[in-house]
Image (cartoon, rainbow, N blue to C red):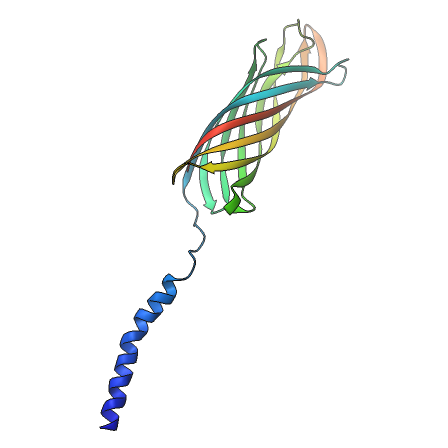
Length: 196
């Protein structure tokens, strides 16, 4: 009789154990998202150009509009990798276009704050003055920025971005005059629609 009661208690304990384990497993916080998801963002904003060179007497500046399109994948829950195309243009006809490989990092994912850095190729103006025609130079660009995501739905959101692009355009010839070491700086403030 005692053995039968002991066996009944053991069987009851084994029958209850899986459901208890399930409850405790369900009460654990979710693990971080794994990578693999695709993301896209498209933005528009204001950009300010500063142009210098080794023998330029003054820094040339201009204001204009900046358009960006980015796309890539998510290797980890707080890291995005991708490509970013940007075009800045002024009413005076100056243009700076770039294609960058970018990495976006969320140091505190719950806040929506991120940093983005990129490196790639750029094509931009080599203006010698406001009234003179500009030659085009091709070089390398480095970009560094910060931003903040505002979630609208599970996959859609808005992001505010502030970025500085530093472009080394090399030696250009403007109006037949050699213009060495042309550097372009584009500071950009914008808003983008994000799908992730």
